[in-house]
Each structure stands twice: as structure tokens, then as C-alpha cells.
Length: 215
Length: 244
Ligand SMILES: Nc1ncnc2c1ncn2[C@@H]1O[C@H](COP(=O)(O)OP(=O)(O)OP(=O)(O)O)[C@@H](O)[C@H]1O
Ligand SMILES: [Mg+2]
Image (cartoon, rainbow over all chains, first blue to last red; front, top):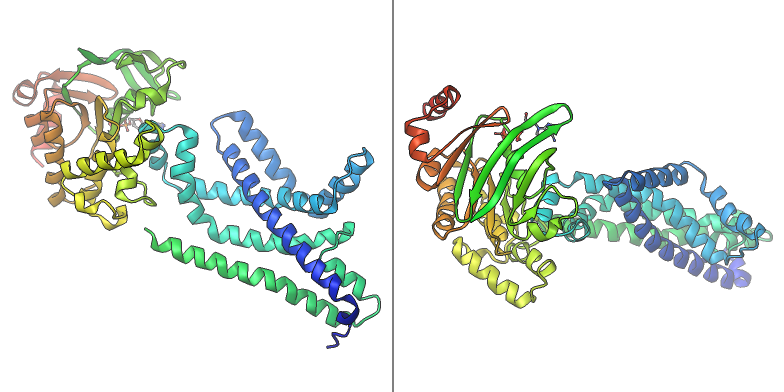
């Protein structure tokens, strides 16, 4: 291993790490919101909302992330909508990951016994109130493990930013391998991804255990 | 005063005619027990009252609201109707106190302190104030059902619906739940109960309604119903139930 490239490229790697971290965090929050909304569409009593939800999931889950990011970046630029790389990266990732999260969240919601919704509605709560106070808290407990997997995929998928020259971790590596030992560069990059994903795994496990205790 | 009125109500599940030409008037303060074999439509009838099920035709008026009318604000009507289910359906992620105060705080916009005070009074009434901060999973079935009744009462409803509230309980816990229901009946609550507890029906009901295959076959006081049933189906049902 030869980490001498750090002498020249240390800043690139720090920037790359921070970009990957912040894109991931922003995308994570956004994808959770998108996923929840689309999941609720998917089980809505209104046929039109269900159709929108299904179309969303089928489209974004079944097309490559790279194509989606290209579309948002180059496609929109061609009609003079210029978005920052950070924004395109976060939004693209969130839209893509949101389709997987929607399916995980929908499965979680549907695993909550039907009687919970009936009990809540029969006490006078609106559909939205019943979802928010009664169904979603129970559903989220069930979907922490699959959601955790999606979080980790999201961090790893953030590497697509490199292809539109967003200055993320993988991009830093692309720059460094021009003059230095390729293996060492990628080992460092992999380690830096682990610095993000391993604490995420531990956090998810912790939440799962803590919530499992609470009845 | 009439509080629930079914007029020529029919309900279908697809092609299946589950409620057939139901005519039924319930007075405020009345305790009505619905009996009948499995699949006869008892739960469906009950669940129409707070529109957990929609009726297909006819008219259903509850507390002055046209239940079947799409313009009726159903959440407003449901505040007046408490419901207790066979399987309790307490919210497992909330404490007993939170289970009871959720609707008063979110729907009635009651201040939380006041709601908790009311909830404690209800818990005292159903005999388990010491469980206020427990989670449902830490309670016995009988205790859970008593909490569910307290939750139903928290909105100060005019009507309470019970769908086989003791059917999921171990025999030794049935009494404690029936006691709470008996107290409610004495206090003048309007109650519609589906139950297989014949002792309770005989003692507490003002009227018994017997259903079979989606129809109300017979209506009468417990006295008339148990001692002098008119319909053959009723006699058969009673002989089966009372001799097992
Ligand atoms: N959602 C539904 N879709 C189709 N059929 C249904 C549905 N719900 C109930 N049924 C049918 O309607 C009939 C009446 O059901 P209901 O639950 O009202 O009976 P019940 O008298 O309460 O019976 P039990 O004593 O078993 O609870 C049954 O034949 C049942 O299979
Ligand atoms: Mg039933």
C-alpha cells in the first residue's frame, strides 16, 4: 500500500468525503419523505392516487439510476434548466431510493393489523391523523431493517455523482489514480465509504433493538 | 328519543346480500343485544352504525346524522360513538394513558392535562388506575379490554358499540369486563352489543334482536325472547346455545 497520494490529494479526499456524506444525508431524508408519501398513495382508497404511486414505483425502480441522473443533469440542461451537481445528485438519489423505500414502507403499513385503523377511525380521528399517530409508528418499527438496507444502498449509490463530475469520494479517486497506485487509492475510498455505512448499520441495529423492547 | 334508526337498510358485499331489509329503531338509553349464528350479519349491522361499513340502500340515521349521506362529516358523528372490538385493538406503541387520551387531545382538542385527568377517572371506573403507564402488552386480556372500554368512553360518546367484547378472553376474565358493561348500562348509556353471553343478555338487555342470514328475525324483551321465542330458527339457536 502506498498512500503517498494523500500528500497532494488530501484536500480532494476530504472534500469528496464531505460531499458524499452530505449528499447521502440530504437524499436520505428526502427519500424517506418521498417513500412515505408514495407508500400512502399506493394504499390510498382513491384509484387515481394508487395509479400514480404504482407508476412512480415501477418507473424509478426499474430504470438505472445512472440514466435518471443523466436525465436530470444533461436532459434538463438541454432545455436550459441548470441544476447544481449537489442538487441533482441528492434529488436523483432520493427519487430513485424513494421508490424502494415506498415498497418497504407499504409492506410495513400493510403488516399493521386492519383493526388498528378501524379503532383509530372509530374514535373520530381522520385518515391522516390515524396514519400519523397510530399506523406509521407501528409500521416504521417493522420496516427499520429493510429501510436500513436502503440507507446503505443509498450511500453506495451516491457514487454515481462522480459520472457528472460531482466532487464526491469516487471522483476524488478518479483524480488521484491518474498518477498514483490504483489499488491503494481504491482501498482508501472503500474504507471511507465504510466510515459512513458501518455507523449507519450500527444505528439501525440499535433502533431495532430499542423499539423491539417497547411492546 | 330515537337515537338510531335503520329504515329498509340493505347491504351487499358484491353479489352477497349480507343485510336484508333491516328496520330497527333504538331509543336513547336503551341496551340492545344482538344475537344470532355466525355469519348472520351481526358485526356488519353494528359496523354500519359508525360507517365502518357502508350501506347499499335504505336510510340510516344516528344521532340526527344521515350516516349513509356522503356529505355527513363522519368524524363528527364518530365522536359520539365509542366502539369496543373483540380483539381490543389497543395501540401497542402507546401507554394505557396515551391510548385513552389520543382522540380527546387530537379530535376534541382537549388540553392534555385535562385529558389525562379524565383518563385517570375512567381508569378508576374500569378498576385499573395503577396501569396508567403500562403498555398494552403488559396487561392481561381482561385488563386490555377494560382499557379499550375506557378509550371508547373518553370522547364522552352518546352510544357505545360492542362487538363480542368477551369472545377473545379467558373464561376467568369475562366477568370483569361484563361488570364494567353492566355499570355502563345502569348509568343510562345507549349500548348495542353483539355477544354470546346469554346471562348478560338476559339480565342487562332491554331488548334482544335475533338475526339470521342477514335478516332481523325476532325482536323482544329478554323475557319474551328466552322464555317464549316465536320463530323456529330462534328456538333452534337457543337450544344449541343453552345446551352446550
Ligand atoms: N368484507 C367482506 N367481504 C365479503 N363478505 C364479507 C365481508 N365481511 C363479512 N362478510 C360476510 O358477511 C357475512 C356476515 O358477516 P358478519 O361478520 O356480519 O357476521 P357475524 O354475524 O358477525 O358473524 P360472527 O358471529 O362469526 O362474527 C358472513 O357470511 C361473512 O362471510
Ligand atoms: Mg361478528
